[in-house]
Image (cartoon, rainbow, N blue to C red; front, side):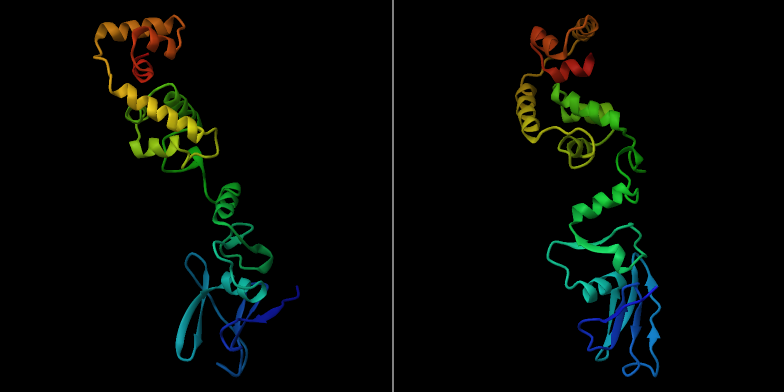
Length: 227
């Protein structure tokens, strides 16, 4: 395979980078012969370049893009088509948005989403039901208890900061329900065993949460909690 080399901008012609993701120093600056630099590996392959006695550590993929494409535009970043951070070949690189970077990672399975994540006990069904319960009147605190997660997690799910890949609540609907819930919180009813039994009976008879709430003059969140 043919390998194309270009000078790395900003280093006075002392180094070149290839479209295959290799970096070399030129002989007249550092050694008598050309020398391929061995990268170190952390998150990305990096090489150490020197200029006027100072050392500069640069990721190989950033050098490839700088030499062959140009400076990275503001608000963009370097994307790896195969999401392999070790593959710094020009054919694998491009500039794109952070959102596109995340989408690519999710598409290839590098960044798991939803129930595939290790740090969640929720499933897609849980999240869908949580969002529906909220629209039916259940409060953040109630949902936190019901699903065994923090209020912050509930908030992130309801506002679609997380779990964006499944049906979300429209922002206007979220705000309207939030205002309604706040009004209902002000007139919370004392819950007795008799009231709980009545809620359960009406719900078992097929009445909707809204119908029960209207009949008993209580909030939907109260009905949903005990139905």
